[in-house]
Amino acid sequence: MSKLKRRPNEEAQTEAPPNTMWGGRFGAGPAEIMRRINVSIDFDRRLYAEDIAGSAAHCAMLVAQHILSAEDGAAIITGLEQIRAEIDAGTFVFREEYEDIHFNVEARLAELIGPVAGRLHTARSRNDQIATDFRLWVRGAIDRIDVAMAALQLALLDQAETHVATVMPGFTHLQIAQPVTFGHHLLAYVEMVGRDRGRLADCRRRLNECPLGAAALAGTAFPIDRDATAAALGFDRPAANSLDAVSDRDFAIEFLAAAALAGTHLSRFAEEIVVWASEPFSFIALSDAFTTGSSIMPQKRNPDAAELVRAKTGRLNGSLIALLTVMKGLPLTYQKDMQEDKMPVFEAADALELCLAASEGMVRDMRPDRERLRDAATRGYSTATDLADWLVRTLGMPFRQAHHVTGTIVKRAEALGCSLAAMPLAELQAVEPAITKAIYDVLDVERSAASRNSYGGTAPERVRAAIVAARQRFCR
Image 1 (cartoon, one colour):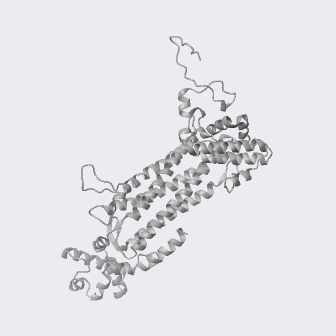
Image 2 (image 1 turned 60 degrees about the vertical axis):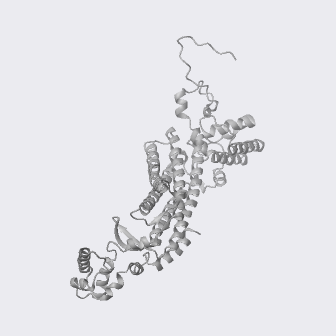
């Protein structure tokens, strides 16, 4: 082919050939910078399975409604199945000139079956198409994440069952407060993850309405069956309002909000792992599988997996804020701004799934040091509340008075440099003469933990019951 000669001062052509998918309205292609800002195939190719599933359901409905012939419908389905196989096999060529996943699939379909491919877009728009694809993808992500969350809960429950009676310090303000059990501590995260699963399940229920058939924004004049396509794709019902159907991204924002809160819970747990694994605490040890070394300090074992879980909370929070910002000023209905909705969701889902897998791995890998945990539990006058409670129960003292007496005893123990359990009876009686040697029965950390047998408390018998109940609630 001969090349056209450019005149000496003629500027380079910046327009691409027209996109045939746009039809006859456009006689020339977009400027290069327009093409670059407009193209989304680099990221929305992840929607290929959902896009093909939606197209197949739409095609079947058009045939059933006699809008499309059975012969044409069969050709389209065969072509879609081949495209799916090509993408799965990695042989499909994604082309930027076709902008997005929808046009890429449609263009390939036309190559495979000819002009019949153009009939597939009858009674739909890219607006309801992408809204449907995206809901399907988020629904699948929720299902995968729920499985990962359940696996984390199971790991926590298994570890908690091993350490039902392992005493450790409970903290407030990161100061030793009262003895608790390690199993009880882990169960707190089982509850957090359970709430995360509940939020995602709520999000899934709300998103499970099908936009397909809303077309561009106003519905369609073709006699379509929206209930049929909704059912074929596993939705509970068609979306009720065509304007809302194509412009709603609440489901994506709600997913990100739930993901961000789940990330916060994982980050809190990761922080505890970092602290527990540090030399001053040494409450747990992690193996080589979940730690790294130092390039200069050969003795180091760094809890990098936990630190990265902690850090990725920023990515989850950022994704939520990004999409809220995209959506905050958009009038009805679809706006091109919404092309920016997918990357935050993809990134958040990827990060959350990775963090859940890493957290489960660390829980199963960690080796708690029972002796170290118990020794820490004896420090910080952790049984002071037990002493105050004994004064109330045994001597009938008002709690506020008992609190004052106990504080005075703790101050004296500090001066003597001893624990409450090692404090001589004479010293205790110097503060409160009515105290007897029976007080020592409540100053032992195991007895302290065992005494907290109210519902939801740390007593080993309560922890055992809580584990059984949690397995029934979350692991069926």
